[in-house]
Length: 140
Image 1 (cartoon, rainbow, N blue to C red):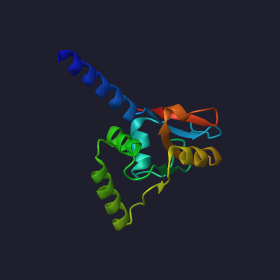
Image 2: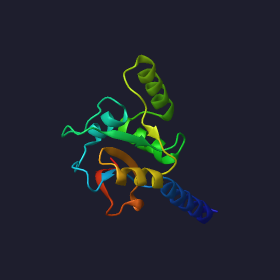
Image 3: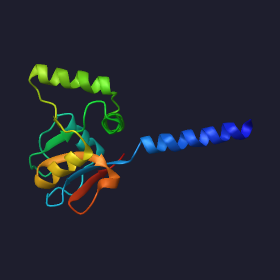
Image 4: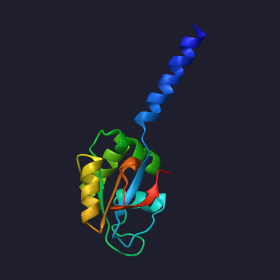
């Protein structure tokens, strides 16, 4: 009986690990942006700033609402739950102080948009990184 509990606990741990793939914040490999702090990335994705630290315009793109990577991204970067992010964004849009990032359908689409646009910043699974994108922040 104890052996079954240990096996079940081990399998559960493996499933949880697989469900939470490591994410990275990326820009085009051609972008002049080389790094962001977690605070800078949070400011950009929350719409509090619209430029990168060097002054270049920043255009954040988001993953689909309800996606595990999106939930984990905002929880780790901003310490906000998905509901808190939605409420925050609704307030920003309603007050005219900002707008939500464009929502894309997947990490592959994020990567495609980032590669072709020097000012776009997005986040995706670390496993998708290649030489077409530059990692500017690894999962905090």
